[in-house]
Image: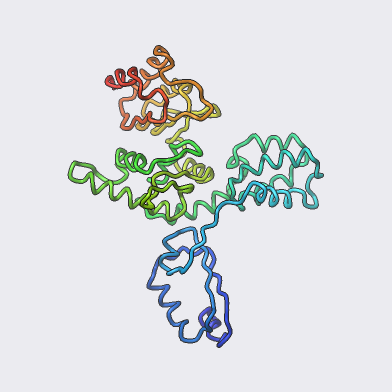
Length: 349
């Protein structure tokens, strides 16, 4: 018996129908399903739909939309605690609880991540093993060929239109927790040819296309923590850490973030797009001879100015002269990028 037949049998009874994890944006199919229900369902019946795509809710004509935020650290820890200290797990001690609370921050509000971490910690009996989990990036913790977190996130990626997939994966160039400018991102897509061929007459059309692509990615929850202008338009946003990991896993070695924890064994000759969060790491870029994008920003804790009084800055900036294939150089996130030194040396590119 199909769902429609079951609902017809309800007669005058009110019902609550929950449609979970809906991806279908076909309005015709939705109307084909829901319009006939009005002939026989009882007044007061409700349909609750869950989706990761704002467009799906719009197509379904949702009367009210509730956007779920991430779980709090306390809620994430409660999920982990319940799983980790189940029968067969380690003995619960104040020390393990303290470490576990820090580990819960890796979840970034994602319930599935908390569940996976709880199951992982259940098999760790010693304090040293919990400390090891605390000190490793979450996406590297899950061993085996199938990472349950990434498998769930990949569903969202696979459901993207083909033209948007490289636009999403290009976001791997941004450091984690970076506040992304909508305007700058679209310009980067244009510079890399991800929006199609460019000429003077097409420039405005490409920008319009970039705005459409951005809105689609935002509607499908690839971006979060949006900053709005007075017109209600998203101007800046962030990517969830795990989506950043997904983008990096898709791009593999073509996209590299040069940071303190970078693996030195990576073959940088295959790197095409690079970002760095500290001027101290610029020298390592020399090995990425075929790089096409360089994106620079500084962390809040970085106290070194890029120009650093002149000589150090000149040495670092001269690094960029080596890249013959460079198409995008964005140093707007560096405190020294407005200096006269940079303005003078940039002409040598």
